[in-house]
Image 1: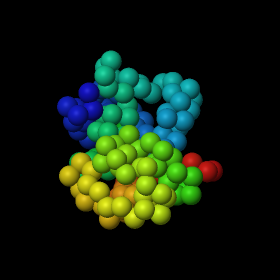
Image 2: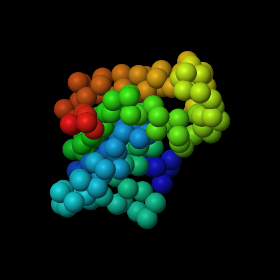
Image 3: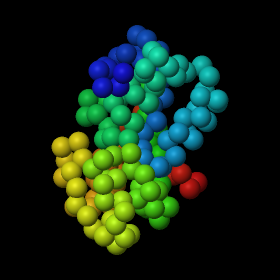
Image 4: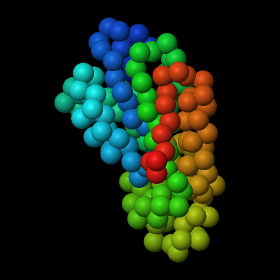
Length: 153
């Protein structure tokens, strides 16, 4: 599974290329996955019963792994989404005990609550989003095999 797998930069040449979809929760990663599966059938999407292309580089909603190499023949597509529709969806269900535990608070308090997720401290939910987006954008500008797309487009 994605927690046990570490893909090296040359694995695309050895085992086949992959398109890995990344993005924060509720950003449209599942929708983009359906589109790539349908339109890129020559690319392998499943590596084992418990590992798909999105899990090749850890959890698809986490930061990108620092070891992802620009020499890789794999492609990572990062899905970005406006905060306006994203925040209410995260309040409804973040799929994280760290965030879901304060989701019953009014929106203003939800947005202002600090929390810790996967060992990282965040001042509020938008801090989580901006931290990940900053890292994603850094990869998209420094790696020719990382592409960013906006959900709204």
